[in-house]
Structures are given as structure tokens and as C-alpha cells.
Image 1 (cartoon, protein in one colour):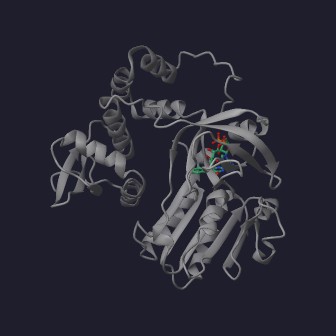
Image 2 (tube, protein in one colour):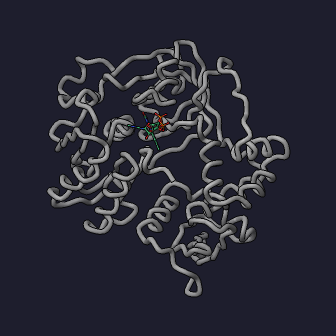
Image 3 (tube, rainbow, N blue to C red):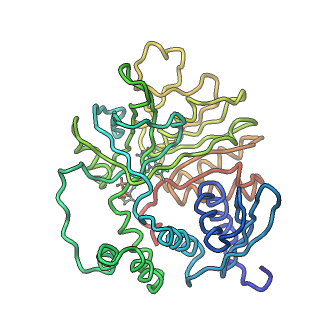
Length: 387
Ligand SMILES: Cc1cc2nc3c(=O)[nH]c(=O)nc-3n(C[C@H](O)[C@H](O)[C@H](O)COP(=O)(O)OP(=O)(O)OC[C@H]3O[C@@H](n4cnc5c(N)ncnc54)[C@H](O)[C@@H]3O)c2cc1C
């Protein structure tokens, strides 16, 4: 990589490397396989990224080697990798829009706090038992109820029309020849009716011999599309996801951990706590913009049997820090708390994107946490943060 120009923003580069190495190694392996079809590979990790390409460590049963993958576009490195992943999918004949559809019937709905709506869902196919942090990309639709919207003549809709008419190859060509700004708009448009929601819990109902029931807890706010969709759903409606992904937490099984969640990450945090197997109790930082949302978590686990299934418990004797403030101040308030914790071995957290970045950078640069131990994610973007 010595002949190549180094990415200017080291923190941003490390963010991308850590993100791909943690959550997208399958896609990375597909990319490597496309470039080097004849090599054996059991695992692949990005070692470094320049503006022109990435250096990948590829492991097989017998050896470890470094391979170089050249980028195809001019643009930022995140876009480059996204484009390569799209390109490989198209070459493999896969649909760009979906990896797996999962249908759910809404069998119940309840309000957990002033702003949190729980959907109780039933599935005809087994749901994952490792539900902690498991996420679905839900289409904000109810099957057969919402008519198709007319397509306008914007750049994004031309791209989508092209994809429909000539297939994904045409869309790929189009994406490659667009400016970075337009590419971003198209990816946004393709995802505009999709929102990620976590499977809060999965279990089987008495009559079922597989895991067929799940909860999704949706934080509603400001008449946003996701909030309106959740509010509009009725018992009997069928809803569906376009893709799904698991979340990994092995790094939390030993040492002193810190867990951080805003309202959108409460369901994932509750799942992680339910499956907790580390003998050391974590520090838990619970963020909210309003006092009312803190009621999602109860602290008295002695009452577990008295209170019904809807309740989420914090482990007894864990160190709980509750922060109530505007999302824009949450990053600095979390860092203040982290400064007061002597030992931090591993973290998991999810909050607004800019705050998440600030916390992740603090843990990386001031507390020397490696990417594997430093899993702080942006779960949503405030408007000002959009490109
Ligand atoms: C892996 C993952 C798992 C997630 N799991 C869940 C989950 O289980 N439950 C859940 O509720 N969310 C979850 N989220 C977040 C959820 O996907 C986003 O909150 C959602 O995309 C926001 O969609 P929206 O339609 O409400 O608002 P958008 O259409 O995204 O935005 C509309 C407006 O609302 C603002 N906005 C968006 N989110 C918030 C917020 N939280 N607080 C204040 N203003 C906001 C935006 O800045 C914009 O102005 C998850 C996200 C990820 C990445």
C-alpha cells in the first residue's frame, strides 16, 4: 500500500475498517472471492484502506496472506466498499434490494411508555433464538393495504426505473457514473421506506413447537415515517422485513463492560441484559430525551415474577447511570461518566450518530480500546448530520 495515498481522516477510516470486520465479513469475503476466484478462504479481514483500494488479510486452513482489492469509483471509501458489495451481488445474480424476507402478523400492540410502542408479532417460520440485538429492516408498509406511490422523474426514480426495466446491471452502471452526491441520494431513496427495528425478544407460544413469537419495540417521535407506521398498525395486519442481521456480543463475556443505549437501542440493550453471562456486572448508561422513557427499564429485579412479561429489568446491583437531555448533549454527558469509570474492558452502545462517534473516538483514543472491544454504533442520524 506504500504507493497509494492515505485516507486523510484516520478515525473515519478506522470506523469503516472496524464496522466491516465486525459486521460484514461475509460481504468482504464475496468481494475477495470476486477478485481472486481461485483462492481458498475461511476468513477475511481488512488490514488497511487507502484512497485507491484495501488490503485484506485472507485466511485459509493452511495459510494467511494479504491481498489487494482495488476500488472502482472516485468517492469516499465507504461508498467504494458499498459499491463493490453491490457489484459483487449483481455479478452473482442476487437482488440488490433483498437478502431475505420475513413476514410477521401483528397479534398484539401495547404502549410501554409515552413514546414506546410494542408490536407483538407472530411468524410462520422460526425466529432466531439468539435474539439479543437481532435486527430486521422493516418495510414501512402493511401488506396489500398501501397503494404504490407514483414515481417522479428525479435522479433517484430514474435509477429505480432503470433497475426495474433493464435489471441490476443497468443500475450498477448508472451508480458508477453518477456524482457522489447523487449516488448517496439513490441509496437513500432505495432505503426510504425501510427502518431497522430490533427483535426485542423471541419465544414460542404454547401451541407452537418452534420460536414463532416476537416483540418489536418502536420509539415514536415527531410524526416520523416509522412512528406513523407503528401507530397505524392493527391486529391482523401483515408486515414484512427486507433483510435481517444479527448482532455480536462475545466481547462482553469477560471483564468490566459498559453498556450505553438511547431509546432506539433499549430493545437491544434489554436483550443483551437478558442473555448476560459475564460474572462481572456492567455499568449501564441509559439515555433519553424525556424522563417518561426511562420507565422502559425497571431496576427492581426482585419483582420479576410479580410483573408481567412486558417489563424490562436492569440487573440488581449493576451500576446504573441515567441521563436525560437533548440528543445533541448525550455524547459529552456519556464521556463525562466514562471518565469516572476506572477500568473499561469492553463496550456496547447505540445512540445518535454524532454522539456515538464522539464516544467511540474517546474510547479508542483516550481509553485505548481496540475495535473489537469498542462497539458503539450510530442507530439514527439527526438531520444536521445528513450528507
Ligand atoms: C441496528 C439498528 C437497530 C435499531 N433498532 C431499533 C428499535 O428496536 N426500535 C427503534 O425505535 N429504533 C431502532 N433503530 C433506529 C431506527 O431504525 C431509527 O430510529 C429509525 O430509522 C428512525 O426512523 P423514523 O422514521 O422514526 O425517523 P426518520 O425518518 O429517520 O427521521 C425523521 C426525523 O426524525 C429525526 N429522528 C430520527 N430518529 C430520532 C430519534 N430517535 N429521536 C429524535 N429524533 C429522531 C430525524 O433527525 C429526522 O428529523 C435501530 C437502528 C439500527 C441501526
